[in-house]
Image (cartoon, rainbow, N blue to C red; front, side, top):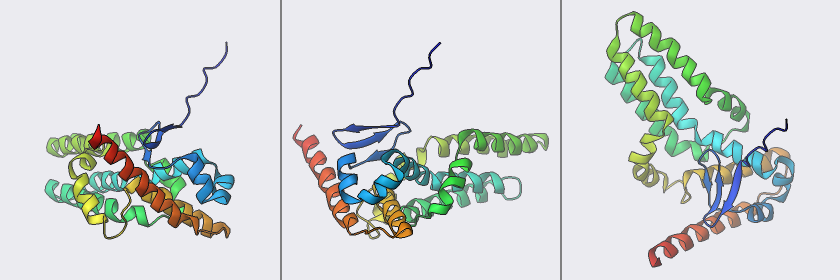
Length: 214
């Protein structure tokens, strides 16, 4: 019995690169190799995209952890407010603050099984204490953060707050800054990333104008 072929992690689309976990990057493999050949040769396109997608989960992961950590000890509204504020701050700042050393542990902590087990443990303790309101809020928070509902509702607010920091969408900024960090770590030239940013903006503006004409 032969194993089924593994689905590719990413694919090239007219709008750029899309990944199997929902990532969208306004670039192409050809562009990435032109911008940062040494980094791409060292890590590979798939690895770079996975690392960028992992870092993109940081705000939601931090929000989840803050919520479940505070629910047993703080008022419900305080836990919810703290989780949302942490998510908002992370969404604005984290695309521009990449730390390669944290990507692997972040990939473990952001895994749905790990987060699910953590929530089951804490919510079970809350249920045993009769704190059903906190259990309900915890379940709702898990869904909201895991399904990226805050990104859909407040994406425009985050984009406006991020604009003074970077004109790029979050995932594009993460990939660009990830490449810069990797290049600096290994002593590779990083001049091509400015061209990369201009190319990303060109693709974004071209696709937007094409949609309007269509």
